[in-house]
Length: 257
Ligand code: NAD
Image 1: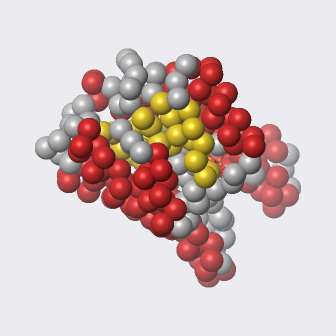
Image 2 (image 1 turned 45 degrees about the horizontal axis):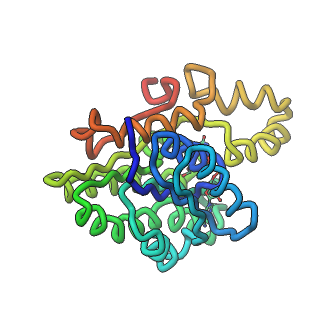
């Protein structure tokens, strides 16, 4: 499988799943655009190291995915976007009646609306190129719910819906759109939840990992960023050309329960 000559833009990719997806797409030969809201030397160095490791062009473009104009500018600045991976995301956990309004707005903006804005600019580029793949990183929480994650779950269900509509609007073209629904993947987003949960339930961090976090994941193992990246590469392959408007779960059996 070679993605040589394709340009992939991965939002929120200086860490976690986005970075893992960037590695796997670059390994498959794609030129990659790494993104986050920061503009540090280490962000540019990270892109340079990926470029060197896989012999592809890798650039870092700063853009804040909570801002519609910056979402659109990211794709314009990339100049080409054959593969769009909408991955940027944040989390906040609180009951609905205590959920801070600004956290709701930020989660909807970053986890859902950003995918609408980037897709809107990328589709004309894909049509011009005659080929395109949109891969939205949703979640098992795009298909099921848990308490205290109202904004995240609303956003991820929204991403699944947006993926279906994008697929229908591009169904007659060589463009597909699908959502990957990971279960728990050990990234900074999940690691950050462990110490607070340990305190809350008076458990060790290992107990929290097994009894709270992986409780719903029948495999009792985290999915890895490489597995999510590999799934994204598969969705860009010829074998997946007729897979569109659907979800692929990488969740150790969570949604089979
Ligand atoms: P992470 O915190 O490691 O990565 C999030 C990325 O988004 C980072 O690169 C961060 O810089 C970026 N980001 C945050 N706010 C941004 C903004 N305003 N503008 C641009 N970039 C921004 O988390 P992760 O676990 O790798 O999550 C990546 C995606 O995968 C998210 O959409 C998340 O909801 C989804 N997901 C994660 C898991 C999991 O268990 N880790 C499970 C299912 C889905």
